[in-house]
Image 1 (cartoon, one colour):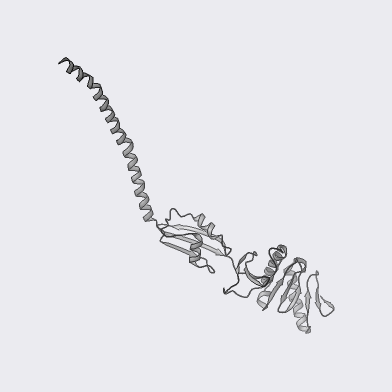
Image 2: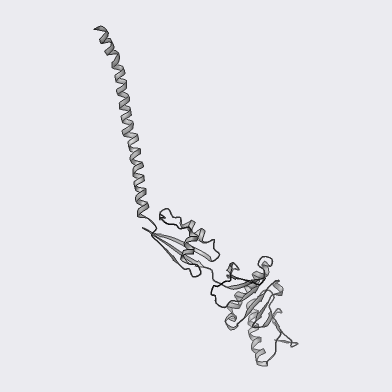
Length: 259
């Protein structure tokens, strides 16, 4: 009987420690594991709701004339099942701006599922003739693409090499701008700017070669307009006109200076 009581008293601390461990484990389960599981479950549920609620259902692109909506969507990397919250407007703009046709891009999100992309395209400004191959360039001299079946209005042709003759090509762009600003572009049927060296730059206007040289293009073209009227009135057969000298115009083959 004494041995039994001793054994029972010995088991009391053991049972107490087991109970304490069970209580501790229960508290850990209730206060740590369960809240974490609930949070994870809540995050998952919210994520699923957000993915469904803010699905990109419509992409609206404005401002494009030369590039199609599909081409721009492909450039932007907008795929199916995109989520509007996760779409990066900066990334989309950066990708679209890789095209030489694009000058600026504005991306705006319109919740719950609309993405608006407004772009500003480069305009064809001239045709660049490089060894018989024609390329469309804008008013900054950027090559947009090789001339193909694209429909473009009448543009001046620049004969130059933008890689080997950078300065001359830049001056040819400036001359083309002056030609446009002075209205000469609309009065001629053929305009070709030959620019390999800036100081020797010339332009072929409907078969008449005009030596322009470098700089002061609008002033020179104004003098050209004046002299054209005089040439027409005097019925002069002209080989070339030289505008490179300040305040005067040389006309050949007539060996005289017409002021």
